[in-house]
Image (cartoon, rainbow, N blue to C red; front, side, top):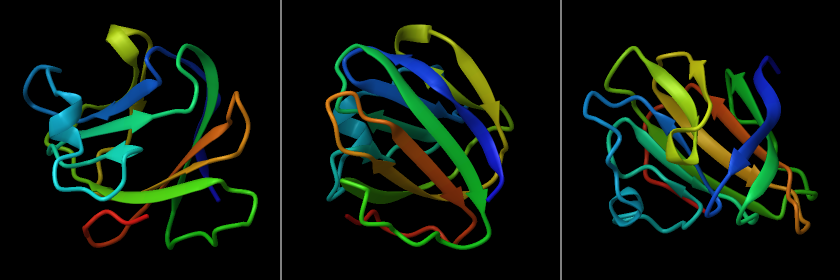
Length: 138
């Protein structure tokens, strides 16, 4: 599995984002989760993923893998949700809350699986793989 990002990021209010929008970063949390069944990976706004962690403030580990097909889901994962992501611009980034650090990502349509390991300071993992866009699931 090719890993394209693997490091700790800083979160506030338990939030971080994947942004590939043409509009300025002004997406509201409620809009991101509108019409979705899961409450961890909001993908309802085009070009924007709103990701929630179990940690309110601090550093959490994020791993992003680009896959050709969905990876099996192991028993070690506490939370596993999926959503679709279609960037609106060539500039796609993983962003910390409040305009913190940013890291570039590839501009392609993704089916996103967002998973968390159990624990108070969870290690988060964000799996991306190419697939047709579909509704979120959990």
